[in-house]
Length: 58
Image (cartoon, rainbow, N blue to C red):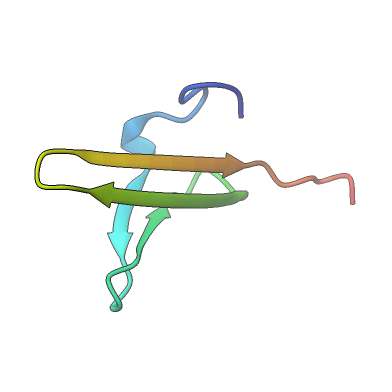
């Protein structure tokens, strides 16, 4: 998908939680895999999101 957000904007994604508390990203404009990691301390929150495109040639 490129660097940064590219073709996907912040309003295209929703960060939700499973009942267990694990976060996941919901979007209707993307069919690939999305992985999210959220870590925090008392003073800092760090979030990393990896967006993988689906290989449609297979």
